[in-house]
Amino acid sequence: MRTNGDAELQDYVLTVARQALAASRALAGLTSRRRVDALEAVAAAIRADAARIESENAKDLAAARADGLSPAMIDRLGLDAPRIEKMARAVEAVAAQPDPVGRAIDGWMLPDGIRIEKRRVPLGVVAIIYESRPNVTSDAAALCLKSGNACVLRGGKEAMHSNLAVGQAMTRGLGDADMPPNAVQVINTPDRALVPLLLARDEAIDLVIPRGGESLIRAVVEQSRIPVIKHYTGNCHVYVDARCDADKAERIVVNAKLQRTGVCNAAETILFHRDVAASLIPRIGAKLREGGCEIRGCPETCRVLPEAKAATDQDYAEEFLGPTVAVKVVASIDEAIAHINQYGSRHTDAVVTEDMGAADAFVTGVDSGNVMINCSTRFSDGGVYGLGAEIGISTDKLHARGPMGAADLTTYKYVVTGSGHIRES
Image (cartoon, rainbow, N blue to C red; front, top):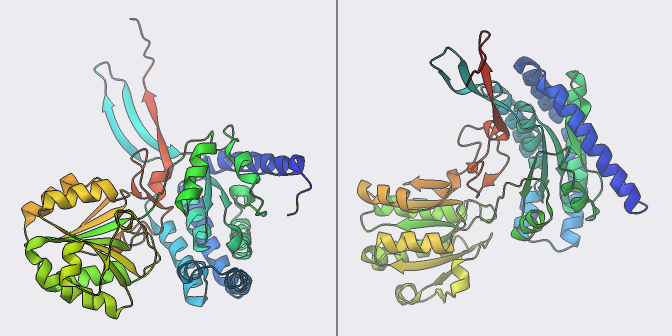
């Protein structure tokens, strides 16, 4: 879409918002079976359009390389046949989940016989503003459809061809299932002036979820008249406790840092208890370096691992999203917890320990949406948790926290049932 000025862009945004609102009201009246059928049709359409999606993605990849995007960003952007198949399977996994809509959260009877029930209902219209990953288009739309919501999807310009191709496939799938075609709308212009206009449409859009870099998220929070769920940086930690299994510690740290460095649940800082630092930092550091990782460490780390560079305070606050890791030696689990709460982003943090008292203290003390005991931070993922896909990993506390699935895209209403009751006092 090419816009000829603010008026045309405003008209476009208004049309999209109104269409989404109308679609959300139509979705609210559909049965669970209809929504499942629609998701299955969407998955089939993604598979049928796989060659076209990959071809359009190639245009985005070529432009990204020409623009000098980092290898991590290009990895996030890329789609091939296995990744497209994974997208379709994620949609099917969402379809197969229990339906959150209409589920009773709580219920009780008053002494006079009135029944009160707290029941899950769709939010209405959800806008997602995101960068790089075109699989977010299908994941977000699937979760919104499962929870009875219409969605407006605004991806980054670097994935414009990919997102539109995925969106077109999904629209065709909705049509095949006789569903409202505007239940999923992909914004078709990269014009940045559109975003504040979209964020002002609080009469039609109920929730905004930004996914991307911290600057994007802060800009959305500052401009939005609509409630925002924030997905800030993934500055994740692994704490290796004094009473750890050394083999477990090595496997977990190496996996958490190197299995995929450009994702939000990769570990960015490793904390070692002083009692195991001299033995484990050289051992685990060698494995990290073999994997191409640069290590930036505190003075104690540099003494036992001379090839490490001196860490700055900023390194401990950094989401590297690449093969760099910060390392620090701590005197106690309390110091580890304090460090994580000071520098972390409330995303995902792990402890490696054979002391269940230490594990409990870590779980209680660390203020994060995901806390892992003796497993990699890389497990912090909606698909791994059985959510089928995720709308993102919320670092907020209200109204959702951690990986967000379909149930997190619902709100609730009270349904009060009487038999002719009237209030007399």
